Amino acid sequence: MEKELKIPNHVGIIVDGNGRWAEELGKTRSEGHLAGFQRLKELCIYAQEIGIKYLSLYVFSTENFKRNRLEVSFLMNLFSTKFHSEFQEIMDLNMKIIFSGRKEPLPSKVIKEMEIITEKSKNNTGTILNLCLNYGSQTEILDMTKKISQEVLDGKIKIEDITLDTISNYLYQPLPPLDYVIRTSGELRLSNFMLYQASYAEFYFTKTYFPAFTNNDFYDAIIEYNHRQRRFGGNSREKKST
Ligand code: IPE
Ligand code: IPE
Ligand code: MG
Image (cartoon, rainbow, N blue to C red; front, side, top):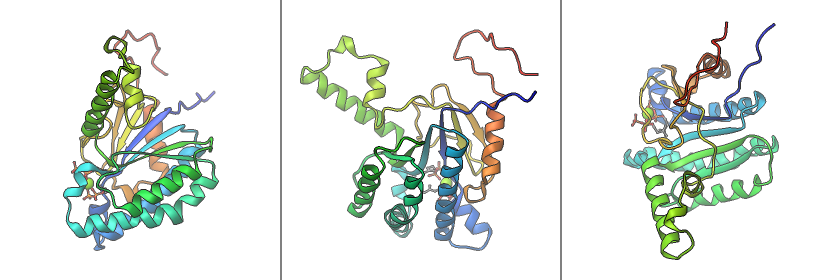
């Protein structure tokens, strides 16, 4: 009998390669970002269909503000308009949308849309989509440190009571650890994505550019996850699947 597929609880995707996908097809980088956004939406729907509970998507890093002004402003426009037009379907499908990252220096039109979809979807009980927008893991750790230090100064937390749970609760979102991190486009790095949450995650790197990364490719990545043996530093008692 076929073994049941193990679905990772929390999957992170580093959405990469929009620009190169477009350049190779003689399109503009903007067209690449548009195609990437469309693919992202379909992938979210598929992730819920196969039973993924948490999906963290790295869509814009704190460092991406270093890109040229036109690309940054194209992406900001894309976020403010597409969240509105494309995410309705995602919300109708009962997915809950949350964001990780600093609000500063995002334009107010983007922040407004983020607040609208967070509010609209807050009671949804389906897959939780954590959009990492203006996100950087180092900044997240810095912000967490400052928030906890302030609580200590205010007498709300005692130093001896700080635990790993405290840290998780003071990150941008109180999420379970990442089980699986997927990066498209062939780069073999995290680029400041959820360093703390990925402590014991499994990794999957594919050369496929994100706009070309199909639901089937995602399913193949999940199959690969099923061949991993996770030990978390302990002895493995798990028998290798035959
Ligand atoms: C990912 O694609 C999207 C963002 C980082 C916003 P890129 O824009 O990084 O595409 P490449 O890596 O240049 O091909
Ligand atoms: C990482 O991709 C950030 C996102 C996918 C949002 P980049 O394209 O910015 O990463 P580097 O510069 O290649 O490391
Ligand atoms: Mg890139």
